[in-house]
Length: 214
Figure 1 (cartoon, rainbow, N blue to C red):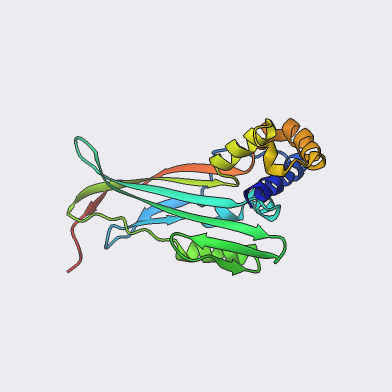
Figure 2: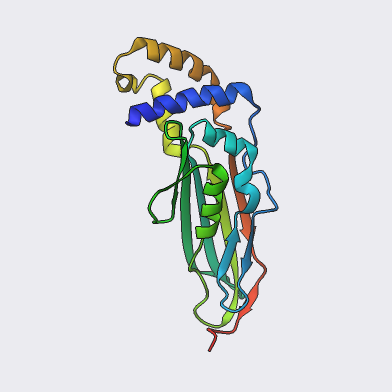
């Protein structure tokens, strides 16, 4: 199964890189923001229209998994700032060209299938949530990093090793498959490193938490 996934990823890389310009990593997106719930001081992160990015949609449709990760830190605001807590939220969207469904997994929940990408995106946005918040009165602020990528770093590393010939047994000695993919993908691999990805750093204004509501 792992080798088949790599073969599909290689074919997708050829199709995507050869037909469109490479988007930039770290592009700012104003629709993604972080805020604080007035009463509880809980963090609220809205991915918003970032998941509707056309280049990301095309990559998902080509069979590349879209991985979303949100890392949030709560800091006390004082003469010496200190980290109070942190929390992470992960999700993924994978298109199945056989069933024509989008498989979605959010947090620790079970995988679900949706017939359209918009429905899958709406499900992710509705299930997003973190329990990070202040537990005692004081001044605080939040830092967050939102990352979206179409291949994980481990996938890239393994694909690169395969292209270098280290994983040739994974294709079962099929020289036709190896030749068709290796010759084409090897030339495009450097450009493929620029596949759609976003990384945004966010910070709230410092706020005062008076304590849990009575």
